[in-house]
Image (cartoon, rainbow, N blue to C red; front, side, top):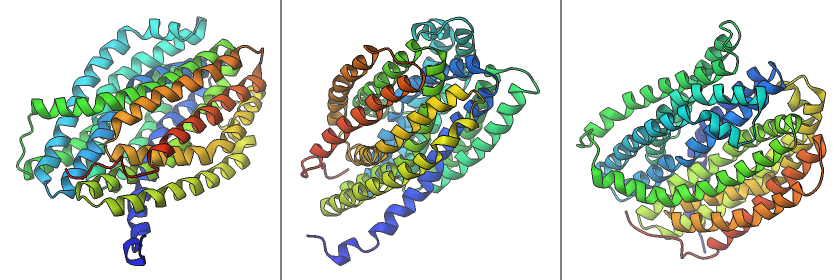
Length: 443
């Protein structure tokens, strides 16, 4: 039983990390929102092509999110145990791994853009715009992965304010660059992708400028340590499998939307853009959970870790209700930000309403995901990720068995994803934290 003393300051501790993290996490999908808002006024084919290109890019980069999710708890645990040198070494190795993986993915993405987009079902003008978006985005992939790893290091150090400042500056630069390259320069979809790549490299350089002195001050070499890189990769392999299951669910959803035509795909992409924005906002508590749970378990403080978990789960549900109400009110107007096509706006409005209903589930899912990542419970997350995918794919298959168009198609796609898939994730994650067997104490 927790005492008033044990809960004193807990809320302030969580909010001190969650609020800046919220700002930084909102700034990240604003890169995507800026692209879609600027591209959306070019036409349906441009919007649909950029949507497919974004899905391919996010799938590739998203699989590497373990660079942040593995460095955050590793750094936090080491700090909790009082080992700053070990913390900085983990961060350094994560950054080197990010650069290496980024270079490989950039090459694959550039030369494989056309077959990748074609495999997603794109044809004609949609295919050409998708290829442009993918190829010009690949220049920024190494920077994106470096930013992921560096952000994880700072989160593990209980610093979520610095990523907020860096992301905010990057977003401002991204908007200016994208607008100039798309309209005055006339690069169309390719301009938006190139502008984002340039902004990502600017952010990466800022992080290196900040972290290199800290690594040196901790007595660590800047050169990567082979064993440390392999350790990061080992933990990351389970997290990658967990992320892969999520990305496969997203790809399957886009594949179904693509089969329903350009209108359905464009509307789905708008709803998915809103989902991404809200997911990052809900993930603010998850980021706080990763850093705080990792530090408390590193310090072998199981009781406080348990208390934090229960508190953040409640907050996740409350935050989900609040964001759901916000989306319900905003749904009739949100489509106008991205397109002038009435049919696309009406279909997107229905999808956003369904997403609004799913927000409390999303809030719980993201918090529990953060708690278990912070605890280093990557293996369980990977296994249940595959289970959740096995539950979701039949639901999505059922949607394809009925002939739907426009708003009806978007509605059923988001019932399957927003409610069916998220309910499955909520159930499996809640089952895991029903006791304390998921806790691993010590650095």
